[in-house]
Length: 319
Ligand SMILES: Nc1nc2c(c(=O)[nH]1)N[C@H]1C(S)=C(S)[C@@H](COP(=O)(O)O)O[C@H]1N2
Ligand SMILES: [Mo]
Image (tube, rainbow, N blue to C red):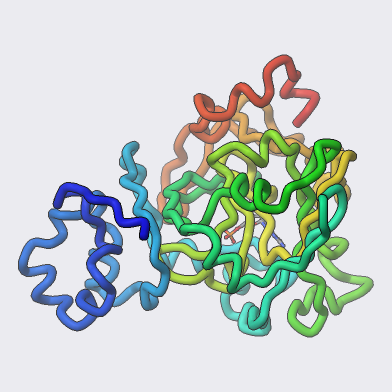
């Protein structure tokens, strides 16, 4: 059993069983239990009935940098998910057609043994962790999200790619019954399926997660249910949603946005306030729900953790 003994002040709201919390929410708050938690945001939102049922068990992120979380409402009502619509406020109303039952991920390419992973098994195999990360879209908006997931590195080790595999490639599900924009064969917004990729050494960095939820509960459909990638130091488009296929390759994958517009979007897409998008500056960003803009940080604030990956590269050319 992986029971870790901690001081009372390290007990997270997640460890107080959700049953206790829901049965006795008022008393819980009156007793000052909020003082036991690292960040009160989840308790606050629960008290206001703004969160869905907390159905995931996970290891809490103590949020050492005190990032201010965006609300569940903000995170789930402003979305980029072109398979539904390019209208960011409409995704949440259209996403019900995505059926995540019996979800499979096909794995092929440079790997000892191609397999089909079952999502439900996968979630049981790897311990879930909360990761509170900044998330920066290339369009200039950002948010802070308490994702729940497991490290991609653990999945890669489990899958045992061949040493000749230099890249990992992901595909979103292709199903035109579930995704209305995939059914618009001629006038669709982009070519489907949506594709993304990482170099294997990037993919092995411990910041990269396969996210299966946020705010303690399963991934909302509009955010990429049931499982998506999160690469917090790269522009949001790298964080591909609703993954149905993984391939190991020795060639750099042609990711969707590079294919659509290679002058504006590359493979790396590292957040970089000094390299502007051809049509706008990337120096600042607007946090969802905020009026004033804030400075964008190099590698989205994760320079210490990831700069080694790009030593010797010209980040203006390899954007
Ligand atoms: N399959 C798929 N994945 C996707 C997208 C998409 O349109 N389709 N949009 C990307 C972009 S541009 C961003 S900013 C994020 C948005 O994630 P969110 O809706 O959870 O904020 O998802 C990324 N992953
Ligand atoms: Mo984005």
